[in-house]
Image (cartoon, helix red, strand yellow):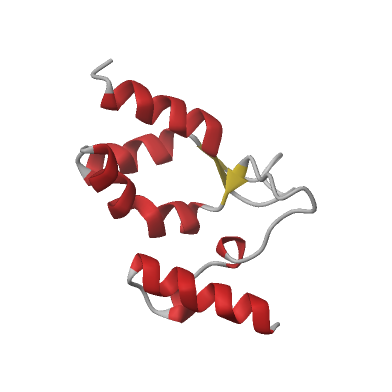
Length: 98
């Protein structure tokens, strides 16, 4: 628990948000440590920082996040998520002007 709380505080400081606003997937990892998806909440937390780093308007990044988000499978299984790989490819294309 102490490690998770340390991570939560670090993410909050890095993204300049309240500790209570840091979603669980920002401070935990899968067994492999390679998570192909993040929660929409975690994507939203990073939105302004990603937009600034990519030189894109936050609204464009938000639209891309929405386009690469999925809800629960069959409306009941799993959790809503953002496909990070496909989002990054779309961000690369937008940054490159394509």
